[in-house]
Length: 263
Image (cartoon, rainbow, N blue to C red; front, side, top):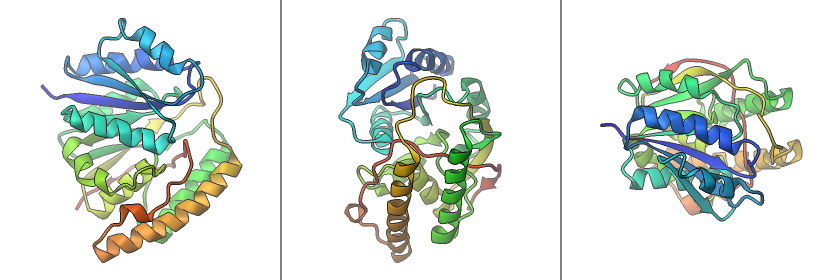
């Protein structure tokens, strides 16, 4: 039986975490007894982790993990490596703010044998014009730096085969907080089979986003420098993971489109 690991990073999500955990645990149960819901508390200062622990009896296929705060990207890498070590056949990632719909997972699951990765493409977004603007800028930057037209590089709604993730995760610098963006770039640059499917993206369902526009601008400027260095390494056939500085960020956003890429 195929083993799915659902990876969800969480930071100060006490208002959302119980609903999110219950909804995604149901998905894990339906995919099989060996599947797991892994929620990584990234050093929250509220009761997020305590609420997860209290739910453990009710949600037997959930694994609450806790780590020192390191940012969204670092929490993702922590969860991805945990899933790979546990022998997951497929790794699915989403976020803990309730903006995505668990019911839309099944379209991704049905594609799992046809492609290496299925990534959501956020359409009709309801999370604010500033987030949409940031996404469009990111799309432009990736086009300029990597010569890639990426529909939605940072969507927190993606399903990946373990072989694909295991192949590229070592190329993501430790602490790099645009991990999903870089993984998407690496997949496409490597001409892997990647499919983009439209997904719903609702407003945050509770709590406060931990990043503001000032931080986004600072992160973006650092990201451009990092991406240029990564491009040089990719073109030169080498990759110095220590050469890229982590950009302090907890969350970024995505863009509109739907298409497939393959080698």
